[in-house]
Length: 502
Image (cartoon, rainbow, N blue to C red):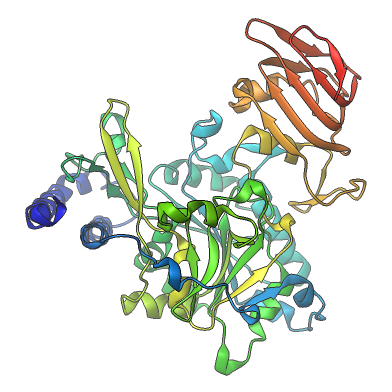
């Protein structure tokens, strides 16, 4: 069907883009009071449309899976460097000079809606009333003061988070961190049936909000370049960016990885490092590094043929997964973008809008570009560098005494006997951050906890201690209040408040 309709759809999309650019005249006037010149906004929107058109045309041309399963090989050992060996190297006196060539980039396009919050996810309080953004600023400020360097922070915002984030940034005016922002692109959602954009105009608020989306973090290369900030940083002498999700509290600047990056032989200068870590059964859907056509490549579950999905999820064949902590050469980004050589696989993300309309979003992943960079490497890092907070279950872990906070960084408590974190599953009553906080008078002692499952209407009093495996199930209509000072070790607490040995 697509082959028969491809020209018709392309013509319709091109007409849509032309109309949108014409309507841009009216849209630009709405922003006339902003500090940026109107013509700059106009150019940015034209580049967005050009990027969308290219992505959409590629989507129409894709036939079948993007990888052939029999061509997939395990990466050679010399391309996946163990972190222990990297950390064994003594840091040179020139580490400050290396830091001065670094920029920290945080992916800040997401909203806190999945955790029941409004506005950017980065402003959710996660530890001692510090937000993700607070912790990031504290980490970089500590680096800058300790080594007397200038490591700037760059936030890649989306049209969903930009306005609120810029207001919040005013609080960091007197911190020793230079903060820059740029916006990722804004693409129209596509009607799944007609393959036509659902947007009628350029508005992103009110009834128009569902028509547009930020096209995944793979858009960082084009939007960074288009913003002018990439050239600005290169001119300032910066050479590498360290990119990570802002909700990954383990993604701090690692001096040993930075030194490893800077000391690669000049004839084999590494342009891209992806941090990977050992996969557990909780990570079976995470992307992994493979060798394909003699290049390192990121393999995502969406690219896997259905017949091989179980094989992909295996923790024996694919033992590592991508943390999305990436170290990338600025000069290489500029070169590859200008050569149009950043070929990233398209991720088709299906959505259903509030009115019931089925749409698709065309996205790309930042790590998928690894195959385009010269002398790319993987570094197998400890699990502690992957500490994302996606749910209230994750939030409970980072708020607990499992971790201590030092200069914006969370480290596992030395009192914890095992390096792994407990497996925590909180039910739907805990999904929203507000409800989660209301259900704990204080965060329980979890130093000796292995597994926690909580379901139903459950509250926790002060100074509760959880050890071993604890399962608390309140049936529908029942409520369980764990009393203050309670110690639950290998217990099942049922809806009728019976406490049993696990």
